[in-house]
Image (tube, rainbow, N blue to C red; front, side, top):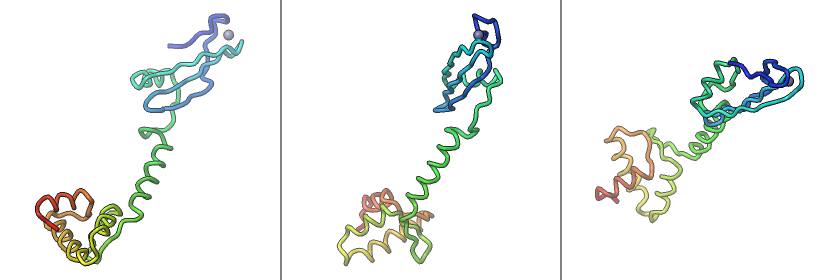
Length: 140
Ligand SMILES: [Zn+2]
């Protein structure tokens, strides 16, 4: 399959490729003789077809390299405020914040109780969800 320039009857070459963006790719073809251009926008299923036209589509990973970088940065930022206690249990920033909302006198006991609850369940991270679960079982 090729695109032919109607005026020149010449096979068009690939000028530029954008994407994949959510699996879609935009490919611009141009006529080497008159410079006429056409753009092709594909859906994810058609992207495979475009590959078969010999179009090199960058990325490789789903969402492309930029997306991968964004994801890594997001995870790092989210985990940066997590606190690890002396037993190696990780308290997410959100869980710490929840604990800080308790009256100061109640915190050490709540911390111990939740840590024990997490360990009993074989967990290594305390999240607000786990605290909710603990509380719904009569904790605090
Ligand atoms: Zn042409």
